[in-house]
Image 1 (cartoon, each protein chain N blue to C red):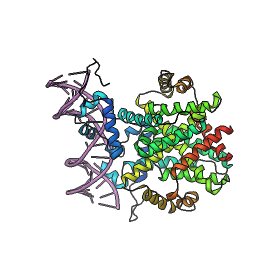
Image 2: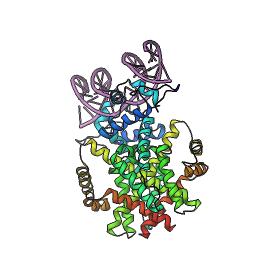
Image 3: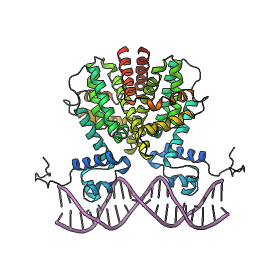
Image 4: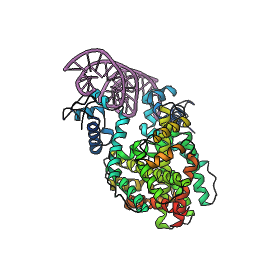
Length: 223
Length: 223
DNA sequence: ACCTGAACACCGTTCAAGT
DNA sequence: ACCTGAACACCGTTCAAGT
């Protein structure tokens, strides 16, 4: 499986793009985005920083590769032949859960426009939108609306998780703090935000996310 | 207007949070996110790096303040009393255009969950959704769907602009390159992306964005 | 072909010292 | 209260030199 360009078998523990990506994922998952440095990476891989550059182009390249690995796995774990409507919902929920488990994926995805991981999602959504019978001339609009929504929620969740991590708060404490900030906003200028503050800590991100998917699917159907 | 804590008038050209934010916006607009450093900032303001820290907490603080200034201006320029439906579309388009003009705003917004600039948008959207007559129990879902979508598109546009800038390409060249990458993907694995490649360079981001808003608005109405 | 690790050119942030 | 600028503790990336 692991071969050099001239076909020789490598030492079991030699460096490879995959091993680097796996190590990066491990660091990102356990310690967050800020912890992924070439120092931490080369220590974990017991090598020099320069060695890593033989296999990857840059830190951005690595981040996108790590993100892509998670996205590929997530999409791979999807049930194959469902009704298109259900398939889109399942895809969206799988992505939501993956980003919940790996917040850095959300952050990376939100700024990886047109790159491999987003193309994977685009493709899946596109196939299902076609299966839905959406005519040619609105397919792109339908697909990009769904994709933008999914990536938007990804980014927001990642930002929340990142902020919570920085302040060493769990989700409940973090939403509690945000709720208290919102409730202190001037009610004249922020009536809506103000009135929503109390509901913030109890709300179900996942259910809200799915509700948004349903709005879009309904909107596409109604077109 | 500009006073010290003990009420004395400051020199006209003395430092202030606003002057720093304006300088940051100027740098971000003319040279992009990567160009905003404390070195560039203190050179432009003819001061030391440390002086800036008297007025701002951190680079993140500054970035969010700069973003908020643009968002506040953008929302301020909105026509006041339109039909809720039209008001939401106008708000969305104004935001789209602002992010198109200041791509760094898109990037900052996408990771500023719950912070002042996103709350401003949340509030505006919330007020219009209420005016739309959406019942209490779905207001939050409706508002957060619209907000997530707007922020998602923001992030994607910012990412595109950033990538194009890095490679010194204009929009047309950039989309052309992306289109050619997409068209070279394996047609067996990526039939949808493949077939959309040709349409990519000619498509209208702004129209697609608005189509997405309409899907969501239709979906909310149909609920 | 692949790896080493020192060197380079940066960063954001802090802080003793000034006014 | 506000500003200075040197110092600190990092970064990602490169590259001559090794195997």
